[in-house]
Length: 103
Image (cartoon, rainbow, N blue to C red):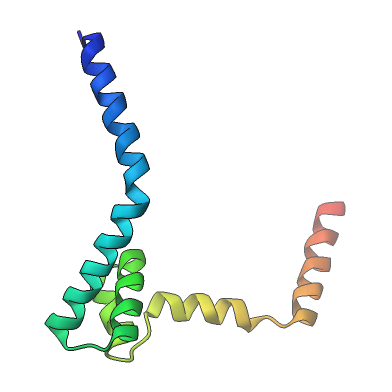
């Protein structure tokens, strides 16, 4: 069984971590961006863009997108899907779907 003092220590540790995260997070992000700049000889804006994208998609995909100039195939498919339909085609499809549900 878990003791009460252990629960109190865990709760205090979580609270301190939650309070320090915004401050330490910025410092850690800046340190990681500086490491990217040094290791790969990138300028500041490219390193920052690469780091932010890497946190979302993973480093390999971010490297291909930012440094190699290639786009992520998944993102291109999503963009194509979003831009493929014009407003008129969207309205027509909506009317067609609405007609199916009325019957």
